[in-house]
Image: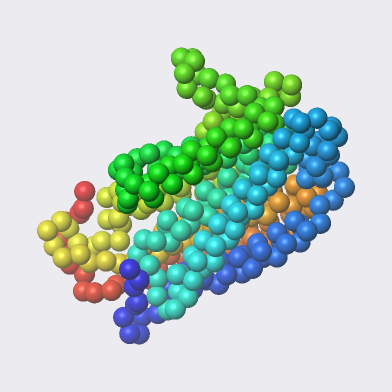
Length: 332
């Protein structure tokens, strides 16, 4: 649902500025990724990864080279996912003179999740062996989730032939990933019961990576300037009442009186810009470039939004009326 202000009531400045700076950020992110990714420098972590898998000719080295390619491929697609949602957020925030009630929160959340996953895979401070193990963990989780998803379908849905094809494809993918993992010299570690796979290990390099990616922890660690936005955004993603009621000025039993919360728009924009800066930072350092200028410019864009958020706390345009409000007692 999009909301247009009544005649004579323009979109808040914060929304219009968010539209502009997010558009600028999307363009800057694309340009920086092209610049850094096309020119890995000698001695960079990217070049060191290449060297680590090319020094030996044994089968495990070939397996790790494949694992590295998959880690990089996942990171590239994750970046594209982040960029796609970043530019989409810019468009829905005033791109056609309207704004959403809720979807900016969920779109921003996707950018943030993609950014921390990208940063986890492309961490310039981990060894090449750990990067390969992380990429293998992400591959395994992906294949396992697909397999579980198909298994949860009603047997024979939508018809037996199609169901069996889907089941066979997901099983083959998971088996192929396990073969890639073992072919790279990685082994599965198990939990205390000895029954559930819990980590991937490479004993020769003293590497052990849990078979899970805790996005909430990564958010807190890697996007610390937006410490709780992930949790706030989840209230929309999961339709929790406390998040949804934030745009409603009526009490239970009355007709809805919906007024977009501009402060939440600002929080979504700020978090998205920080997520973009994280991707640029990791890509630059991985390829041996100094990303500080790009990151600083992103923080300047974030500050533009932040300044308006501080003003919004005392401004009449912090909320947009879309109909005559029906106010009742304080909501729970």
